[in-house]
Image (cartoon, rainbow, N blue to C red; front, side, top):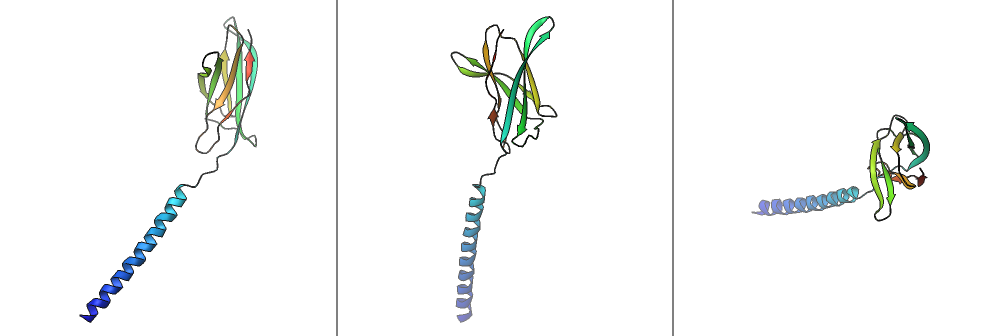
Length: 137
């Protein structure tokens, strides 16, 4: 009988240690899951250039997506937004950046229109947007 009491006490002590250690491990895992990953800052430039496409005067809006240290970011999606009077900025197109982080859109507005390039970010890259450019025709 005495051996069974010692065995029971030892098993209760072991269960207590396991429960405490398991609770600590679960708390450590929960703390690790809430840690934020630092995302790299990005920069999105913009420029306009008049061009002719099939005997029509158009404007090319070009941009370049880089990190803050001027490293190009190829394969990322960049959106072209146009300013509208009623709805603010509205997305009118999207393109994937090329090998050197470059992207281009062809526009031909009938009235002066404001455009901006927008990168919405990824889990590893911060979002960014270019300055606003006004295209006049």
